[in-house]
Image 1 (cartoon, rainbow, N blue to C red):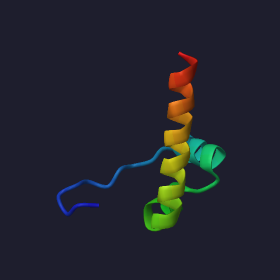
Image 2: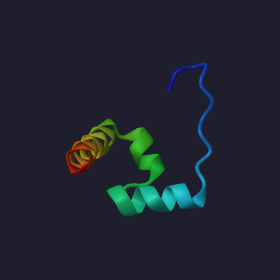
Image 3: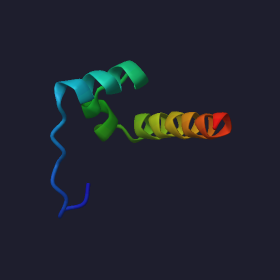
Image 4: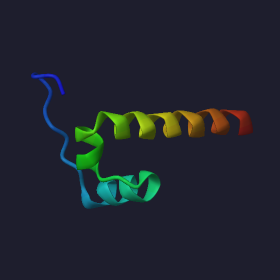
Amino acid sequence: MKSNEQPMNYTELMEKAMHQAHGVSTQEYQSDVDKMIEVEKKREQSYEQAKKVI
C-alpha cells in the first residue's frame, strides 16, 4: 500500500466472499504476495472465461 492511501475497511460480507471464493482472508491476501498473485491469476482466468461466454 502506498503511503498516501487509506486502508480499506472490509465488511463481514466482503470478508466472507473473499474466503468463499478464494479460500483466504483479506488479511492473508494483503500480507502474502504469493497468495495475492494466485488470487489475481484466478480472477483473470474467470474474467477471460466470462468474456468467451458473451
